[in-house]
Image (cartoon, rainbow, N blue to C red):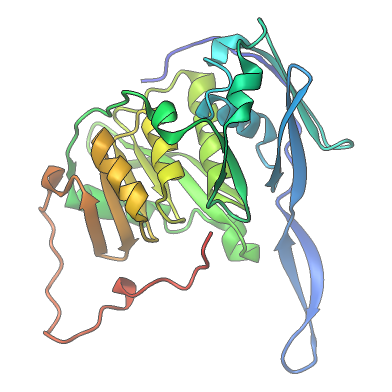
Length: 299
């Protein structure tokens, strides 16, 4: 359930995600098409430079808010007074209602992450997770399939131009129908996840009855962010890392990867899946195409 909460003052500086270009194909002929935009956005917290994020710029205010919350650089949305994005200087200026304590100490612990290109996480993973445990929940296989079907046509930027990842915050109606509450695409899966975290904080949305979907791989950083959102089910069409799996088990996530078509692999929380819609078994010796590593890059 969405609960009204404090809303900081926000600019409205979203950009168009794609640009029209002309390329030359393998026959030497011009082809009209689109490519995704990519802009640097430097995040300032109370006039202190924190990080520069490469982004499509579709949801810059939510991205800034979610990033600061996920990195625990601000304690809550109530602490944020204003977020002002200015693309002329490529900056998101975030001001707080009270100065953040120990900001220098918080910024001193940097981890180069496995995000698209190189990302930065502040603080140690164990500190970011703390004693977080997500709400134990179950999900029916039939609902999982319905949700994947509902997400199939949501990646508009990817179908137009490629080169992006998508993340979605999902739920179910009272009669069990899938509901995609927010789908965000960006050049990196972590930007998309942060924008969703910002949306949840802004609207007071609880995560305990939600499902988080991403097209990218499930690394430790992604698990940390989803756990901090309080979402108990994490689904990806890509693979998992060993550290990501370890943390998912620690916090109690249902972690499902390689989810494509009717195929999926539950790496954590398989006992909380109700297998009510198993697909027909393939003949012995058949190599399931979606079981092979996906050719979608390492982002």
